[in-house]
Amino acid sequence: MARIVLRILDGNRLHAVRTFCVLHQPFSDTHADMVRIELSTVREGINELTLTPSPESLEVDADIFSDIRVDLELDAAKDRIVVRYSVIAEAHLVCDRSAQAFQQQVEGSHLVMFTKALDAEAEDAPEDTKAFVDKDQYLDLTDEVRDTLVLSLPTRRIAPGADELDIPTTFGIQTEDETDPRWDELRKLQN
Image 1 (tube, helix red, strand yellow):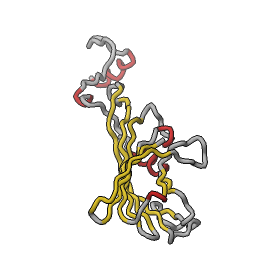
Image 2 (cartoon, rainbow, N blue to C red):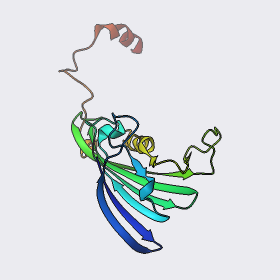
Image 3 (cartoon, rainbow, N blue to C red):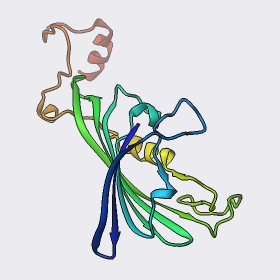
């Protein structure tokens, strides 16, 4: 189940605001609340929606992602719909320096255009352009939102304050008198 807030704008004037829960009927029973926009709710002009999909519906690890929110802005015309979205989530990460668990908010944004003028079989179509036809009941953004969310994870995961930690570079007890006898021959060459 996904919670949707729909704001319909007419020019710069707010036309209507609706908040409702939607149960989608996906083709696969395993993904009950994918990121889908029902075309019957989209009006010509600017439409704004907020979705809160579960990690399972996006097929991302629930141990890493929580509190996922997708803010969508749809610019709908007769033969095309431009979807701008941003996805924000709480990521549960492990610090690369200290190996301690920490949480960090991650976010990403993207734009996808759905058009009727595009041949669905065309291989030369831009990657961020998708075809739709009048018989379609919804626009599916699940793959795009998942990719945006996963790519928003930092490559270097450093917990707050971990940059200031002193990381030991030697381990065990060492004294200056202890030397490895394998280096004795090299020391003789140095003298």
